[in-house]
Length: 461
Ligand code: ARG
Image (cartoon, rainbow, N blue to C red; front, side):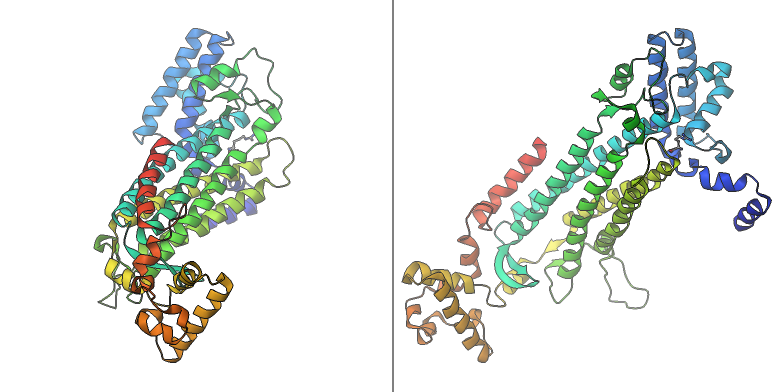
């Protein structure tokens, strides 16, 4: 078994330990497509610069395309003895086209090769995630518009604070996810320099044209310093840190869905097809998806921390340590994608219960601020004094086991005569949300506009 093999390799000092520790093909085979694209661009550039002949380049490209087909068909056998994806592909190229394969690696090192592959992989991962986030934002805009006037409790400290609208609450996530898109895109902009041509670390003496390969591979430019080009993993750290912030948002949304779906809150019903049951409790409908949305953040933070730790203190230029970037990258990309898809499915699938959220919005004296504001506006009371009057009123009611929602506006004058002629609507949650029309506020009219605006901003990115 595998454990015995490791043990024997150690005892005999044989090469299997080196292979176990060193070989990366088990995971970096995921760079195969990028590696082939990079190699084809490199071969074509070498021919244009007359470092290899046109015929040689054609043979190399033909072989690489065959390998691409083999990999896509699942027929390619990756061999750990050949270390990594780059050597596996090059070895197969030799089998397919013969000694001319040996010309591909002219003016190139695995160090600039792996850097360009990883950049292209991150770029594609960002594009996938960005497209998924755009869909999530579309769902948020749609649902926020539908619920622009439905009132729910707003919390601070998870204590009842002031009424807000469901649409407003959803749009808060819209802002977060829009910033996430922006962060991912800014990471993408920064990685837009091809490192090919840096070779091992110092550049190369061959008359190559790095702008040619950069153009072929869709990069806007070329790295300016060969040492940096092969020792830079900022682009992965940027992706992971943008991803970590995104994971925070997914996690907070997941947590709210977990809370909201309890009977105690009862703000939402979970979509049946996205709930899991219990093996013992027949009544259960568990929010497993939101829980995992919440939990995915753990491994994403771990991936970021792992790579930060690998990179810190590494001397220039390339060190083998940097090979440890990939599993963190792949893991984070995979689980961010899952998290965003889960968030989208949940946002689409949950049903809000506006009668329940409206009821709860009035719990906990949430219109107390509005009452104080009314004293300020209609009775010219300084806000600090109004605050203390209403605080006293709330306490007075609490002693009677009542809240503002239970009070008859007419009786409040008995507590303080400045409440005389208080309009009943001042104690309603609808009034509370409608009057909060400062920019970005929760007033339904603004929320409806903000939903439309979010859709526009999402499409304009
Ligand atoms: N598999 C390696 C990596 O992912 C390839 C890079 C170059 N290897 C080397 N010995 N210089 O980092």
